[in-house]
Length: 198
Image (cartoon, rainbow, N blue to C red; front, top):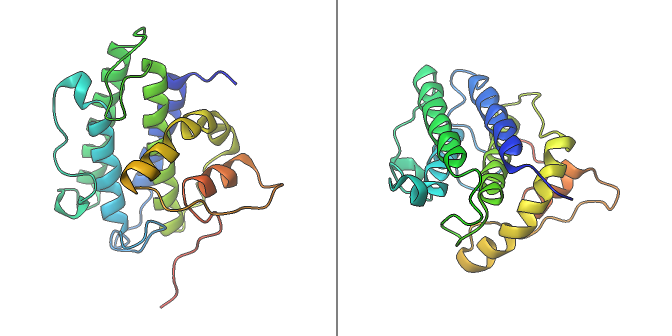
């Protein structure tokens, strides 16, 4: 199935922004499906990832280490939403600037610009889901977006998992599960995850 990476990126960015706008006050320290990371840390990780994925296009490094997100500045609230929006806008412009390139440099190696944008979309979408689940928002990862992300996931998840250990092991889901559940399971997430009770 051919996918439009730029359309996927726009949809995933909007999903991430919608979820972050909806985080209730006081929920930034809540646990998430990303083991040992709070909502605040997942937001910071997602924001820094978007910068990292375009750093070889923009020649600017992320503002912090995506895998040490506790050192990043977003504490939640309006400032966090504004900062995320700024970063996502910059990332989208960077991908758009190379839209027709058959090969662009990425942290995972050269790939067509559309494929790189789709990888960025995958990252944004799964972290949006993490935050939505952690904060009780009725904003699921849609099956239509997930179906479009199947190809970029197949391209990159195992590589990152095997090379860097940055995705958890595959979580098995029922054979008749929908695209969203299958994608989440493939990226090491339990689609049925709920916040731990006190």
